[in-house]
Image 1 (tube, helix red, strand yellow):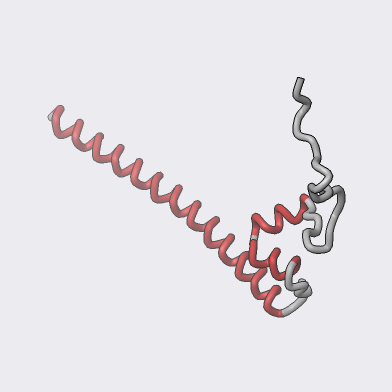
Image 2 (cartoon, one colour):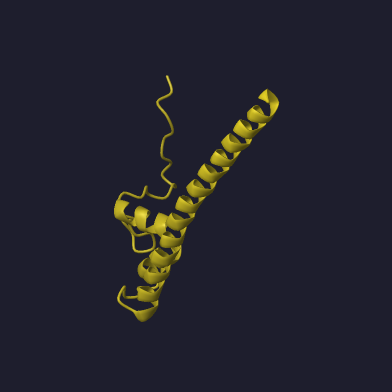
Length: 100
């Protein structure tokens, strides 16, 4: 009965803990990376302080983009609503024209 792979005496030891060349990544960092990989990389790899003018400008730029996306969603809903009303009016006019 095979119970899985066995270690050869010549195999390198298994990694059992954190190492300097491969530090732990925390769950909170996954969200930071998903939000802005560049910002995560600057903080994590380059050790850039979060309070630099560039980081503040980047945060403000992200906020502006978020505002633009929110406005776009609202405008899209307005345009779709107007298109629906236009189709409804065209249908009523077409119906009245045929009934006459």
